Length: 340
Image 1 (cartoon, rainbow, N blue to C red):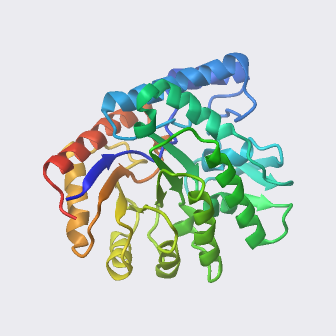
Image 2: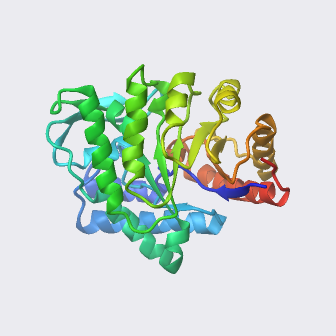
């Protein structure tokens, strides 16, 4: 029997009223919110956003609660956009979606900033004594963060990836106690590392993993794994690998699991983080059960049930409805006794 844990990859949509408030405070048009360096009224507004996002998850009774990443206007690029040695250029497309982030140019040494740790500490305060068992940290994985950035300092792809990994590890070392860490690695499947780089990408993930005692999930989405990068990712010392079973080629992901195995835990992206159609809880439970049925040779200690992608793209009302369906679907799957 597998433990079923409901969670999300973070990066929530801003509540509509907060979006309007922050746009006015920053003097920008709606949707053009600049990350980092906030103080005074802007910092207080983000505090209110965080409290609301945490309350939403508690109301849905999720098993893991993220900070929500309300300040991450540049999405997965955020940990670098707020760094003093990173310059932000023009607007570039965020993968193949109709969302954009500011181009990152790393022009100096990447030292830990403590920015994400401060967010998590604030979320931990909201959770109180339960934070150690409920809090889930979220970061871009090192391969994805390096892929989203341009190196104008290190001068070598391998050295740059290693530097990004060390930077993320330094961030993680400052985190408060957390139950899980989701490393979001969409680039691992959308722009899979080539020969040689795939091994280095796995080693970079290990660098980040070594900085935490929490359970670590490498979550991928939008596309399915290529076999060789997946094989190298299996060498990484992570607790679970996440698979998109909504948008990606399900058969290719299943082939990787059945032919190459996977970790003792697994993360399943079974709720659509981009489509406004709200799944029924029974549908969520059925999807979890279906995946388990397709991998009869695997025994999972824990199954993380999640959105496939960040819900950043969803209207707030649909996101809240999906949170409830996800949590209830995971509970149904647990009650029905999903067999690994």
